[in-house]
Length: 460
Ligand SMILES: Nc1ncnc2c1ncn2[C@@H]1O[C@H](COP(=O)(O)OP(=O)(O)OP(=O)(O)O)[C@@H](O)[C@H]1O
Ligand SMILES: [Mg+2]
Image (cartoon, rainbow, N blue to C red; front, side, top):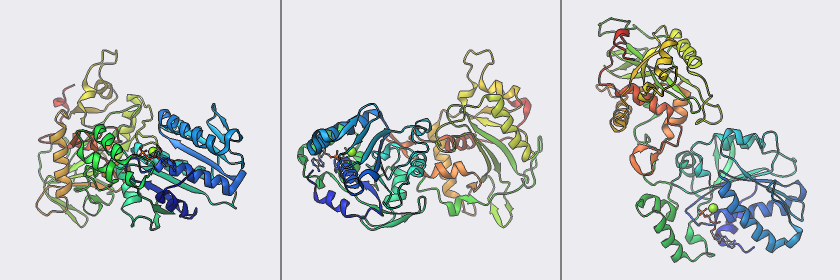
């Protein structure tokens, strides 16, 4: 296998360093991965255990064909492939498994198994890093050989934000840096089609232009391998931990109760985004009367989010726990009682529609279980997002209502700052991502006024 200058340069990076192949389309990332796998097997013989991962079976089949081609040329019949298990055994004893990983359930295939080189291709297709982080626990083996992770991605995908944050904007290309998450040293190795002498470059540009005719930014990301394209996270310019994060509080100060019309007290309500196979997210919101908590003053009408209840798989942030409404209602009541408030608030409109089931709408079911929700009128997503962005941006200003989120709202902090834009509509979020926390917050903010929840006004 002949290698390009770029591929040779990647091969020179010592195996002690993990590598992020984060370049444009056609920059020869996948072939480079194959070269790294081959070299690993050549050097470590039967101690080498390589796992190459793609999100989809289709992607895996593409790579499988490449291995057939290259290994056939290199080893002839001496390399054996088990098509059922997707495993190559090379003449030098090396083991290369081609695997698919899309959901937490798929991960079971790898649970408890060991690999010495883990390769994740097209990592940009993963909206969050959980599954990939989980795979890292499979990276272990004979102490005499280095273990390593190699990740490849194009900019502009669903995982653009977490990849850019972790691997791109850390240090200059080819200069090692430490990734806090893994504690490992990484090298960012970018390439574009121009680094690939094996393709007809002029033809390749035409092909890419044809594949994204209406999306100039994506085309630029693919051609230039540019991670700074305007696909930056949706809230990137308005959210800042220093301004928006507040320390957890232990009780609601000077709570407004029931019918109280006193404006000097803190109003409060729940806001909820429903999900069962997807996560549900519930938050407690406080509205400042223009008062301080501890040292910090919150201008009138500022919103503080003080507690969260999210039913998500701890590994896959976009997968729910499958809870029934009564079960969820119990958990919501528990949270409300802990704060000594009524389990009442706003929720997305969808739960009010009657699906013809005997139990009526989901909102009815909640109501019977003691949790009352009003419609958030979420149909206008755009003004909801605008309001949320403006309040995030205004946090910390002495005279403007801001949006503040307690640090104990872990799911919020793990997801909202990294959510990307909808590739087809830059004013909206990409809904393939774990947007449940963002949605719940949007519902809670969208109401033009926030009356203290009056039970008789709750239309169900
Ligand atoms: N060492 C090599 N020898 C022969 N051909 C190569 C080599 N490296 C790359 N190529 C050719 O370049 C093409 C693009 O390379 P590759 O698929 O690795 O790019 P990529 O960066 O993974 O692209 P994408 O972003 O579309 O996934 C391959 O299909 C192959 O034809
Ligand atoms: Mg590729």
